[in-house]
Image (cartoon, rainbow, N blue to C red; front, top):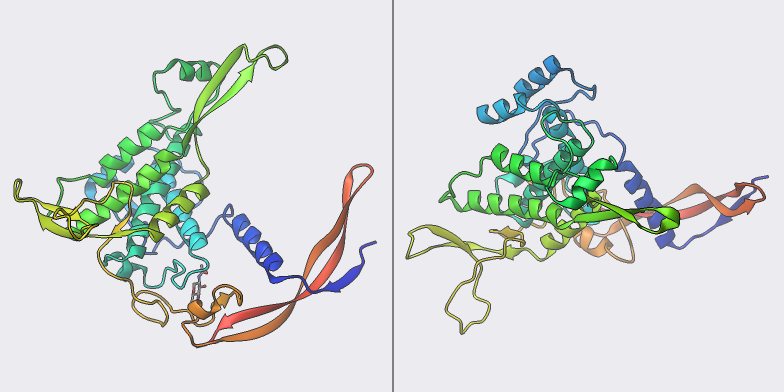
Length: 362
Ligand SMILES: *[C@@H]1O[C@H](CO)[C@@H](O)[C@H](O)[C@H]1NC(C)=O
């Protein structure tokens, strides 16, 4: 019989619950209106029905993208849906990665943010292109696109995989498509455009770096007489984590004109004061041009941090920007003292505990 007990659990346990819940949320559909200004693809697709051919064409017409992109969309049944998936994926990942930051990837102020050259802008470009690359490769291998299927790299391992009906994620197709779709035009003189393009490519590379070959053995009692392998992308969560790390170590750049070619180049400041040469950022580094605002108060770029939940031990001071925080008590129920019963179920008690919630003052 479930008993009720009261206990005060350490806060980090509570946080864990909160995070698991967030993680869970991740796989639930979220309802975007399609009007949100998202990096790269300001889509207005909102249906979640599987699309027939006719509907597909209509969906492509509705996309707020260039004429060329519409044409590419019409040629690719399944694309409109995949684009929508990727927008959702990038939004949820961004909000998850920034859940403890002052800027929490809110859609408020997104349009203004995308026009600037902050670190946050860099992250948005990278996470959007990574999500599209990921979603496309997955859509190919799961048979949701008509014009691409499994990874068909012409190596032996892969042909064996085909025999066994294992379908590898088609990253080759998705990166090629993305390049075409975004139209990597001749490098623009405009610094902003180059920075955006650079960060877009960092996103694609981050997905690529997570591509792993997975193998499976077949044969008498695990003898591995036959081994089949296929390419598999890591969960998008890992890509998000990698990009968040790149955000934290992003490099500030400016533009110089290359005397030889007359073209503008992105460079970061000299590493050592005695070296004369600037150096170019690596193609795996996120780059930005301007220092970010504090995101403390409601403004053009964010709704501010008033009312945000913070953790007293770790981030209330910085999250609340020194304005202080309110403390509230609330009681939460959860399963506890769980025991496995013979045979075969788990019996838990219901526990309640009081937790303190800290929210930033106005
Ligand atoms: C982000 O912060 C704003 C302002 O405090 C809040 O209204 C919003 O719900 C937060 N968004 C997420 C996804 O946590």
